[in-house]
Length: 355
Length: 268
Image (cartoon, rainbow over all chains, first blue to last red; front, side, top):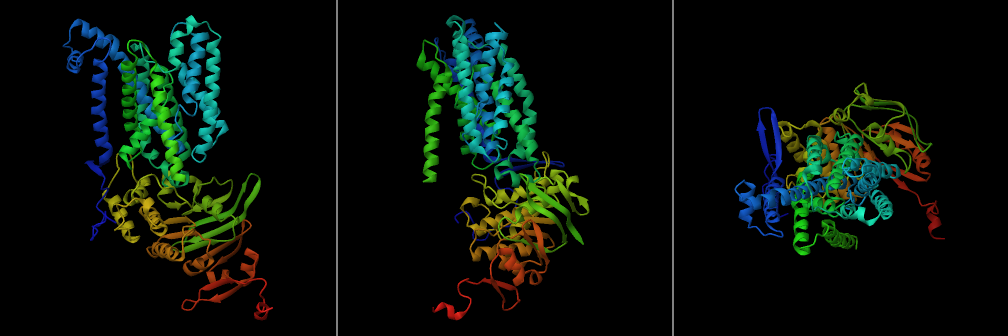
């Protein structure tokens, strides 16, 4: 009762939003969501500067900043622009894609465990890339095969579970089984090859960002940007999905069409994110959970989940670089470790709620 | 005037017929209750009328226009539907939930208008939510939460409202609270079609009842004509006494204990 004033005022409009009005157009900006976005962006910039300055040759954060602005010396420029920046950007794009796609699938299935890495999307994408790079496109990196594999994985999942909105648990369990299956197939394919050929591919399947250039990053980033307008358009109806299919439909949302669009979008985004640095797990689960904890009760925080995904992956990647110096350890191992802890925490929390 | 009408509606689920040969009309401004035993197809009928399930056989018309002609959004401006157990999104507060009623009237670049504010304010006032606006919906009592959902439906500002068992799982006090709120909706000119479990509540509040048995209409009309001993006995396969409530004379249904046909039987 603490929130209610003794003489309640008549309702004035959404109390948690800024209302922007230009002519006949009006937009509601959820206050908390925008403040979190701002804070998250600042953190991401800071984490990126730290990531650029840390490494085999240490820079100060100010050096990294000045080099970025074009005021560094030759050595610093090579280090930042040729080595560290491509990796950093790859990590940011992959993290954002995974966070975004995790948020979409979690909202669609209404289950926190339903993320692209749990339901087989990422492993399907991985399997396709392994298959193509081993047998079909020797030499070049078949990043474009990844949406193909992911789509097939989801087609299999959708055939086995027709109604993800109502059967979230089934969706997740079948997805876990498919994940195992795809992973086993991929491992089998790789085990038939000689070790010399496998080195980089094997590291990639564990989630690896060392030695990234712009050749994969650029087309992937462009594809992701092209999907953003569609996503922006879908955020509004998406926010009605947590009410369940019947209520959302009653509120004028074409739920079947929305589910199909969101699932397609989520697959594409997850597959593109996976194509860069491999199947990095945990980001797609943690980022949306973090985002919704921070925003509390605003619209579905798809953009904040993307920012959180980028931030978490930059932190994980930097941590792995510092800890493993001077060797290179796949970033995926660090995220897998953190992810295991998070999953345990969530399951224990869920069990407490049931008890 | 007829607002909603159905002709020859049939529906089967996995080849099992759920509804057969249903025709009905819902006059404007009335509170119409759908009653019947468990599994008689009440909720299915309501879902078909709300276009939540695709209609494969028969015809449903809203304002003399086939339901299938309406787009999802367009329909949501004419007809509001509240399912039996709507999910409460995590952390959502009363005010936010009621605002969702405006969803079908809003768009990407028209996210909030003066009309939206007035409708939400009126809905909150009608459902007496002024003191609850900032509370999380999950923390409210069953009756309060149901009033919040009804306010969302009101904010949707439709001529027709379909409610699926809005009083189930509520005690008698909260049931009355919710039924009074629904009655206020009809008093303000809305047409309400409501699935009800509780015959006494249905008899007391509805202008007209539609009794379903095994997927077809067993009786339709004012409560006093529908709630008769032969019909109730047949519908629920039981043996009841029907009394008259003091005051409005609404029928009261009291089931008989089967072993005690005569008062003397109790002593033996």
